Length: 216
Image (tube, rainbow, N blue to C red):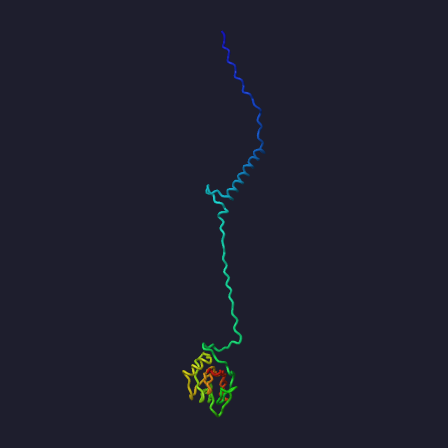
């Protein structure tokens, strides 16, 4: 009995050239390149910004603050030299004719320079006695006197107005230490008299007088 001849076996595929296996150093180098490229891309995206992708650049979010500094300089004007302690008058005040202390025990003429006693004649300011050791009784038979309100320091113009509106003649006015009188002298000069001390035992009074020039 005859058996069929089996078909021939297909030829074995040709074997190619053997492939080289990749070394670990090769893959490490590739990974390093990928990492470097990713870092560069990330830097560019962060620095430049990608508006289309909704990425905001850090540089675009920096705000600039402007501070305004205001400096205030305060200057103090120097006081004028030779300023008087008497208050200024709106109409101006005449020059002081004489000013200084007086010790009065009778009548004094304020029109003379310096003022001097006119005893027994009538003077612009007359001292009679001290009441209760505290107040000097002052009057005048030749001039007009007016009591200055407490705390005021009138000039020539103010003294003139005070005497014209509240002046008294031939009337004794009790004045304590620190009290003031405005006077229009016998020759028409305004004057301010201040009691600085009373001396009951000596029966005299210390005054400070300021006499101005005539205003007319």
